[in-house]
Length: 67
Image (cartoon, rainbow, N blue to C red; front, side):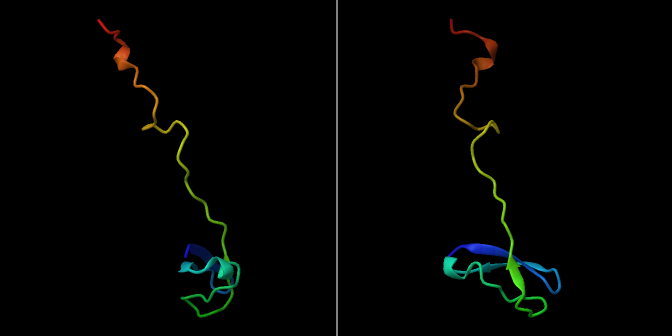
């Protein structure tokens, strides 16, 4: 089961819950105030790729040719 992020409409607390995908969009119970007004947040995530270093590109050999 995935972990989803929620924000309480009553007390503005942010929390995570392990829920089935079927339950993901249902309001969650806030662990701080007990309200059932926890709304699912849009989560952001980092993806691999790009030129962040550590890729498969050759290193260039420091500018020296083979002899």
